[in-house]
Image (tube, rainbow, N blue to C red):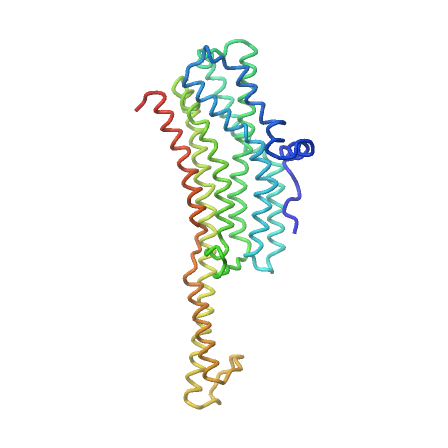
Length: 356
């Protein structure tokens, strides 16, 4: 099935450049990734700006240098790969529903990216306006420097918005999948999670991409400490933290609850089958085959029934023991890393400003 019908404009630009440069990371850097670096070089004079500001600006710039590639990777690789993998644990009768979900959210991602970006337009441009006094104190005074720094802010808010859009789409996709698609959990799946690791992998990879926003925290706190309306900056930081947490916790919890419900139904089915087989064996033990129930079971041999009972019990135990929360050691490691990254930069900011 086709899970990548449309592409975001950023992805189309990168794909065009790939025809000339080959690797998508190089294509993304040469088409758009260089813009924040150029704007920072023109706007900021290392001889006039403070060390803390220079470090914060460099990290904030680094956050969005890779953004075009991140956007392309989510749009062209991560999103369609999720649907290809999740098809394996989807009941065959729900394939059409899965295809409809893929088409719906693929279009949402490629067409409505500007909705999430508008939120960052309001926050980031407000910070740019009210932070003029602080920026001038760091040597951004002339019209060329101010125009270049405005260009940096516009580029930054654009890709912060698109990354946020991807995080939101991830949450909505997994929520819709859990609510509308019938799972076909395989207790013997190699991942040991009934096949649900694909959900955790999808969520955590987008969480890691979103958590790159922590590179902007030192500059954000620098600005907040030197402007009058610092609450605007903290609102943006709070939104970022919410996105990082929501991007992983909610969708994986949602899928886990749906899988738990499915497991309970499967356990009830196997439990009933075991009881039926045991009752049949008991009737045969009494030597009264005329008392056998009409349960569509043809076996009248005690040994065959005992084998069937053991097989049914093994299947029951397999479903009972399978871990249905989509976490593996590798996924947990990436999750911890994505959480520690913002914490690290908060501590780093406190260190370079002497707030310890």
